Image (cartoon, rainbow, N blue to C red; front, side, top):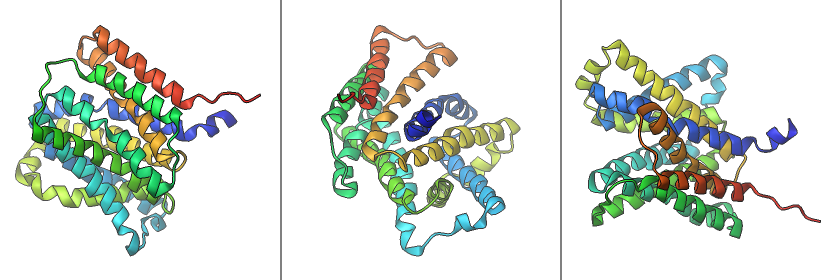
Length: 293
């Protein structure tokens, strides 16, 4: 039990990546039903904010209290991270092949390690670097299963998507020093919802949400791919260094690949198997603590 408590932060982050990795179970069906990417992001943000807002009102309204001088943290996590990342990633996919977009997005641990040194005074160890390189090579092998395409603007969008993805770990960790996990997650998605809803074609979205199956998909993607993982990851950030958390998050494409194999019958080739093995090895290296005699 003490061992479990000791690694609660790491376990929370890995569990978060499991839920994030399962997003295709909902996103593919929502795309088939007619939702645009912007509408899917808007639905995730709005439903998450509503559910968590109601939860806090019932449990303890004091959880809703934040200081005005701290608003920048939540604007950062909601708009500069969540929305900025999604927009850049969508444009990266439009310009590049999906595999290249995936690899560029997972440059986020490098950004986090760079930002964590001056902001949190975290030390970059050889263990972190070796683990990150091994896991990132595994991620490259997992993602490069198709013909590669990369444009100049696509490279910019891809690197910016990795930067935006990284920013949640920075803003989330800063906020975690003062606020609860549920408060951080609520305000992150409240501001994200306010920013994206005007661009989500509300009449068309309203028509889509008249179908019960679409409502179920919307609630499902908000609950299992937004509320649960973001709360788990935010909790993990309160226990684990931001740089370490970012490396642990590279386990997400492993889960996404396995979901594709078992849920959608996708073929896992030798490169994918090797990629999964390298990601796992990288995470083991990250967690390894030699015994001192």
